[in-house]
Image 1 (tube, rainbow, N blue to C red):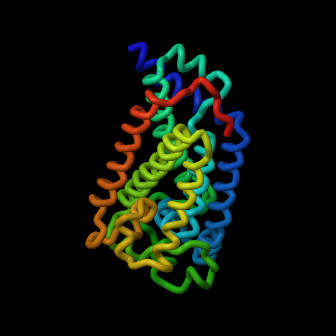
Image 2: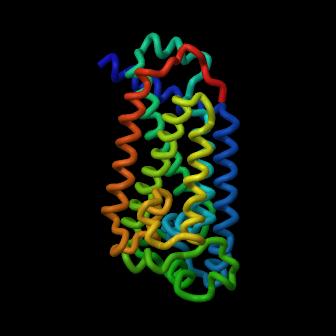
Length: 280
């Protein structure tokens, strides 16, 4: 019981630091501002046709390469201080023990990713206030922008997928997108934690940026078969065609990577000298 309290205490302590962290505040402001700009065309179209928008833009907005890279880079920046060692870390590790400390960091990454994903979803909805309506369907605005040239005429900043409405209802599509995004953000956070912990450098940050940009490399220089081996590609619902890449395959691969990284986090902490505090 004491160990469990220590784990949650460490995780929640890291989350509490967000309120006074300029980096986290900058991420929130930047991402919300980006979503606000990206949804202006939807608002203009809604006003023009006098039809309100349903709150299901999220799965579409993060399916575009530009929007998804923006989200991923924000996630990387969010975990840029991995392995989350500060001046008090040696004392916390001594009091809680190595296993509890590293478990707390893993729980923190999972919680932080969840909070970040919820924030990203809200950032796709809040700019639409005053033009929203609740409907379990996609709605005429999203349907029209996805299936006609209206998106181009109104200079829409992201591509509304025609595949997503065809394969999924809006609520499942949104939940699947949020879950896939949570998985990839958690993977990014834990990968940075493990690599930065082992190297005492920013290798994890650099590698995660490379993995993120690999998605662009696939679309422009490699065969479409390579999509099956890119975690970033598997985390977007528009890339899941139900045939070559299934939803079950995407969830299985991302979940397996996440579990492996969790195991590595606990395994490597035993061999790492944490007597010196890392400066990120």
